[in-house]
Length: 273
Image 1 (tube, one colour):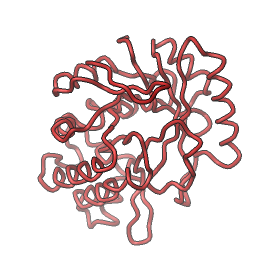
Image 2: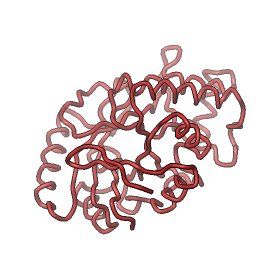
Image 3: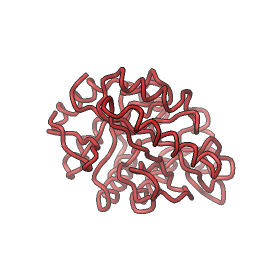
């Protein structure tokens, strides 16, 4: 594993992960990471959104992470983060960093998952957009454009989540100008507030995608606009901690990136690719 590797997007049994905090920390140590953060899902205003931190589990999560920071000092640097949704309603001032994400859209008074299965995404397009999936994508990117300003995040999570199930263009054509214009608009709006986007391999592990978020063409757009990147496994289990990080470093080099970011006790720093 390359020196200076950092993973800040991970979940545990406190929200929708499969393993405990300590099991995830041990997996990070085994993977050779120098820095690791867990970023549990904050609560949201969406009525059916479950599996998030609550008033009862939040202090347990914070307390366990404090204990693990002490227990594994000298072996790995740990941070306690949170993934704040655009519709999140939990204060984030108690966390070391914030990942800002858009998991839902709201239209006509109805909430819908952005990253539902392929059938669920098609059903959303049919129900709310007259079968026009590109209109669904445009609505998503309209919301995503505000994620940095609303969540006050440090890192933008899985920027093109709408494409989760679109391997091989099986749902929509991501080369269409309508799609690309909507995505680039959202990116440019976000960059007015936050420059750091994660290169997220979560769907490569869980949904058999061949590409990370953002897709390679979006990484090129991001680089041309002065954006920065940090590697992310979006790990929901020990086996997916730092998933395909060496391959992502090679992808970033081929796209023209010269460095990636890591989080240290002194703040975010550059690591040369």
